[in-house]
Image (tube, rainbow, N blue to C red; front, top):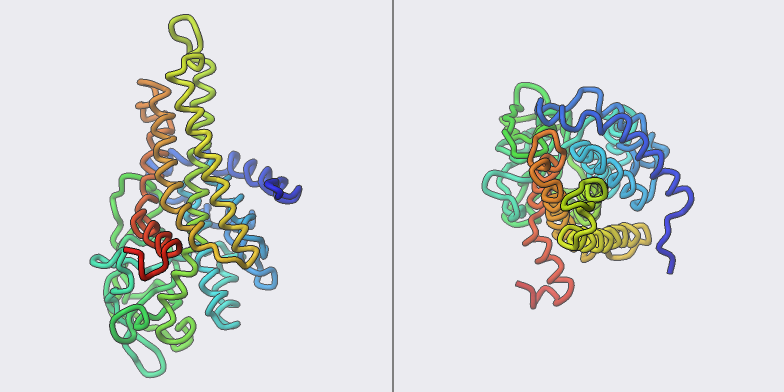
Length: 381
């Protein structure tokens, strides 16, 4: 059993860390205060190859492994957590298109991600249907050879900036088999957006998106009718491990800050790290962080190995964001009163990671999926 990354993966990690520290970290706090995404950010990530990691080389991407995508997400998360949304969204959309898209659809949409750094969105959640996504009500009505979309999607990450997206809409009867997926441009008079005023991840542009008869050509349907819901659930198995690593990257940076402060800050004539009340919580969280990283990378390794990774990815999804929140909180407390100041990054990190305790599947849903894998569907709640 080998727990090491390959020399190529380690070199890639170093390159991404250097890029992120140079180009992303300096803007993390300012973008949050301004509640906006810098216009140049998507193109920066694309030029570094980070939005096209999972896109095949023949379509302009890197054709990288899932583990490599995890390394990139973790390193970007250390520097600028909000920037991870562009990487994770692009990876999830690519996964869906590679699974059910035609060659023409892949050529059109995946090149936009890999070569141009266009911003895609995943439009699934609705005001009355979040965890119960199979009951969504946004509808796609037949219009000649194409369709028209009606209804509201909400809590759309990158919703204020996305130029296109994958929309899940009801084309048939109730339940998951009545849901289809569409790749659509998010422009024109039939789309309107309303921004959220969020606690964290303020530069991500979370929004509600309204469709008032948005025309979708016939070639916008991804896969066959009724295939949409099942395909997005498969994609989430993969993206949930990436989300775990994004959170753990941020937590790792917070823990490093706390350890450095514990070495230099003195009280009662000694560095505060020499006191067990300070050192032991940091030692405990370093242990938990390492275990959670192994779990995330095991899920990605299993995906690369064409093995079932549903349980591992969902374990990572419920645990890593919660653990990261606890680690960042402990880092803030280690700084004492200085940690509560706005200029200390722990407060922003704490606000940001809390968002992914909710987004892309709550802890309850992730645990339900794990329970079904462990017990069988007949025994799970």
